[in-house]
Length: 342
Image 1 (tube, rainbow, N blue to C red):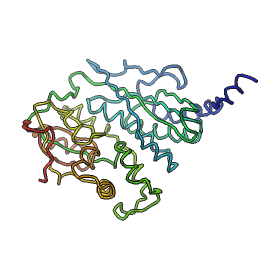
Image 2 (image 1 turned 90 degrees about the vertical axis):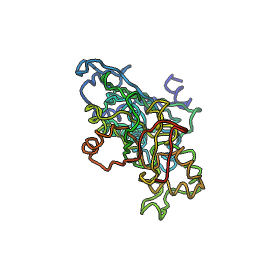
Image 3 (image 1 turned 90 degrees about the horizontal axis):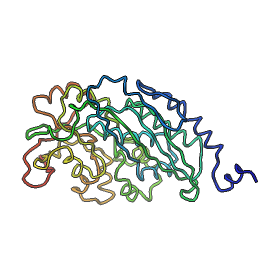
Image 4 (image 1 turned 30 degrees about the horizontal axis):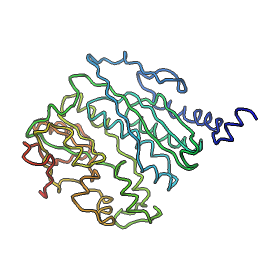
């Protein structure tokens, strides 16, 4: 018995692994940008910082996965958008710190290498990288029979960006009176899916719920996370933004206070939030308390900006999309986030 046959009998198909690498090269090639160097498939991804005219460069990194949204991708056999979710969760975090994403690496672990399926996943990763202006410079695919079932896989990623030291967004510039501006989310994004799956456990995903305006449930639940890099980066470079909150797990209550100091609070008018139909469906079908929804989901706002009042009009001018003026930064007298009915 040869070593190759021995490995195959243990459940690992090395030939399928080689095929995956070949399939994904063309997707990585689509994401090439200034600074990306070296060929995919080496032992380490390379990036040349010398091409950037940053006087005091600070590297800012972020890592994340997709969570149990993956289980719906597997259930519905739709794998071409979940990679964008993974990229988004990482690059939206680093843009919130003021960094321009430079490169991305992914990690996929699976019970059985299925080259066509994994190519779909990586195609989604590449699409996310294109939207973020980030190069896909490497990754890893691990076949782990016994750890995962044959139809299962997990996905995680790692992004690195660069910021001019003077433009880092760390909460220190947010001040009382700043305006809170919201950018719309594309849907649930990639958070709260353990609850989402419980609410819709008995659904096939083919249902067209009347509240969802003609879309199949599975299309709405797998809508990929929006990437905000290209919208927000010009604002950062022009020095227009004091604080940024990426609304992920923990919703408004956990994430908004992360962009300002402990002596401040956010006052948000609920009627200014463009609540998406899927959140109303979740609240109704899941019998979730209304106030708890803001502790779990983005409710239709995926990114929130704190902006000086005199700069708010310029921010709205540069953003080629609806911008929602949600409230103000105030002195803290109680909780860090106050959501009122207007």
